[in-house]
Amino acid sequence: MFALAIHGGAGTIARASLKPADEMRYRAALEAALATGYDLLRDGASALDCVEAAVRSLEDCPLFNAGRGAVFTHEGHHEMDAAIMAGHTRLAGAVAGVRQVQNPIRAARLVMEKTEHVLLAYPGADELAREHGLPLQPVEYFFTQHRHDQLQEALREGRMRLDHSQAVGAGSQVVAPLEEPEKFSEAPVFADPNWKKGTVGAVARDQFGNLAAATSTGGMTNKRYARIGDTPIIGAGTWADARCAISCTGHGEYFIRAVAAYDVACLMEYKNLSLEEACRIVVHDKLGPDGGEGGLIGIDAAGNVTLPFNSEGMYRGSRAEGGEPIVAIYK
Ligand code: ASP
Image (tube, rainbow, N blue to C red; front, side, top):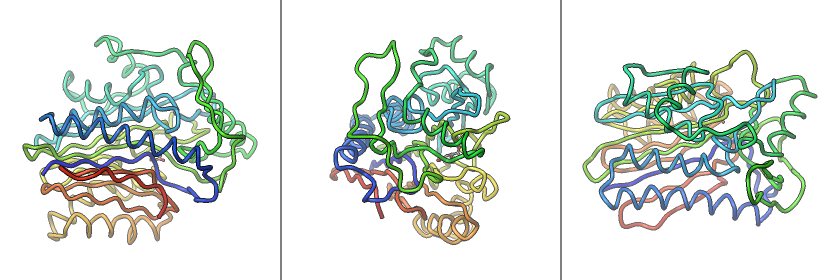
């Protein structure tokens, strides 16, 4: 059975704070990403192609903190992280701190397929993308007003913030040279301005039994000193092997210290736990009590999916062969 699951970030997503029109936008974007991935799997594409395409679709949407909707660094730049991993070969590629690549997940795949490395960072990673002809974008492409406003708030507060998804009611307009800006119902209203998360990810099992995982993020608002989160760290935010494929979202430092994604694989391998049980332990018994708010999506070799989170909500969706798409935001 082929299947896939996607996420668009976990965090404080209160039902009351999302205007119906904005909720519809999120749902539509998740449905579009699911449809892209599902159609590929149905037509015989690999799990790797599926997760890359689903993540690209979310990176191109300004609602999510990845690619076009990435958050701002302290200096007012965008430094994006992404990783991709193939379960059957356990080959992986990742980039950290890229500033120009339109789709960081494509750059991560280049690292995996065109170099002998696993993780490239900063100008070198952009350079690799340029050499291989990936589309690069000027800084204006990555500008969205709500992320800019979030940076101003974070600068006033004087700290780094997890400000990822939940562009609730935010004008997501993008400055020239982009055409039609996204329109939102009204000014930003945040359930908890100090804790909002994003990041996008996908996991899939293809018709041939291969698993793959992909994750992409802009990281944290007001991040400094070339901070890198869990997303591009293989085993922390992203993992795939023959048993499972995992993509995480949440406060990256906790996920790195917990080696969260790989811990799921270990629990399955060494303790013989099911995917669901292993993911539940990592998210609720380990990360949660530590303060590591967030969630993950996982898929196993049989195509079972699980999407646990310990935060208020997580933008998420899944679809299994022959089934209907399922999209959800709240608990
Ligand atoms: N895990 C990402 C990071 O720490 C952020 C997120 O998923 O919300 O960079």
